[in-house]
Amino acid sequence: MEVVQGMLRGFGWHNINVMVGNADKPRYRTRKSQIATNTLAACDQNMRFIYVLPGWEGSAGDARVLRDAVNRRHGLRVPIGNYYLCDNGYVNSEGFLTPYK
Image 1 (cartoon, rainbow, N blue to C red):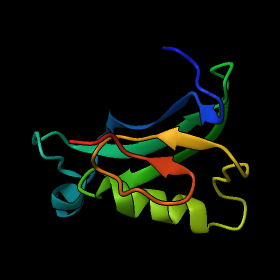
Image 2: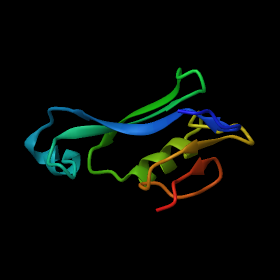
Image 3: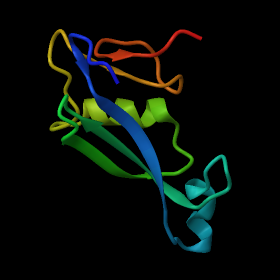
């Protein structure tokens, strides 16, 4: 991937399969019917993890998890003048740029 001025390299989420009690399975069921936890991760230009937010249930939407990450006291921060490229599960906002469809 070509590095563009101000672009931070890695940002995204990953589903990690988990085992939960039967009562909790609906919350952790993903769109692909897996029982998983949703983990958000961000990397710097050198592909080093700078932020990880694990533990959201698999059914949680990307934008909801991102909103939680940026609103936490020691949450995800994007330096002024920088941004992350995101997929269409997110919305364009300060520090986050989604591709044009």
